[in-house]
Length: 229
Image 1 (cartoon, rainbow, N blue to C red):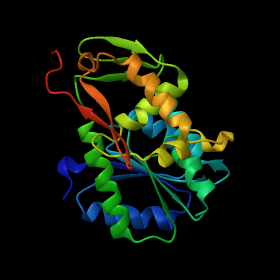
Image 2 (cartoon, rainbow, N blue to C red):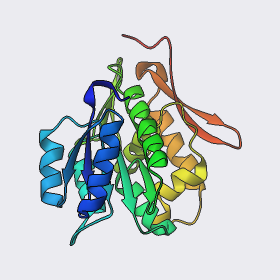
Image 3 (cartoon, rainbow, N blue to C red):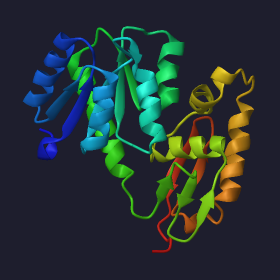
Image 4 (cartoon, helix red, strand yellow):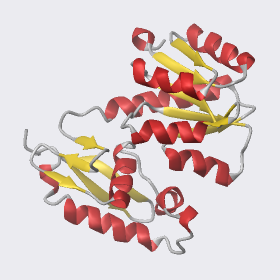
C-alpha cells in the first residue's frame, strides 16, 4: 500500500483509460486525480501536492510533452511517467528530453506501470536532501558549503544525475537524452561536460556529492560523508 494516500495525477483525454487507472491506483492505496485537458492538468500541478503524475503524450489537441516541459520549467520536480501509443525511439526521447522520468508504451500491463511508479517514488524520496538544493530558474546548485551557477547544458546534466542518485547512467544514455537530438556526433561531449561539472563543483565536499566514473559502465552521483553541515 502507498503511504498517506499519495496523490497521483492522471492526465489523459480518454475517460476509459483514466477511470481504469484511477480504480487500479485506488486499490493500491493511492488517491488518484484525473485531468482530461492540459489546462486542467496545469492547474492541478500548481494546486495539489502530488506524489507523482502519469501523463499521456497526446491530450486531445494538446501535447503532453509540452505540458511536462512547462512543468519542469516552473521548477516542479514531481515524478512524471509518460504514456503513449507511440513507441519509436524518437517519441520516447522526446518525453524524456522534456523532463519525464520514465516512459511506457500502450498497451501496457498495470503491474508494470505500478512497479515503474514505485521506482520513481523511491527515487524522489532519495533526492529530498536538505544538504543540496537546485534552483532551476537561475541554474544554481546550493550545497552545504558553497553555491555555484551552471550553464544551461551543465545544469541539465547535473540535474539528470541528481534525480538518479546512486544509479549508474551510461555515456550513451546521457548522450541520447541531452545531445543526440541536436545532431552532435560524438559521445565524447559527455566526458567534456562531466569535466566541466567536476571543476565547478570542486571541492566536492562543499556540495556533499561527487560524480564518480565507473569504467565501462558510466557515471553516478554519490554522497560524501564528511560534507559540512
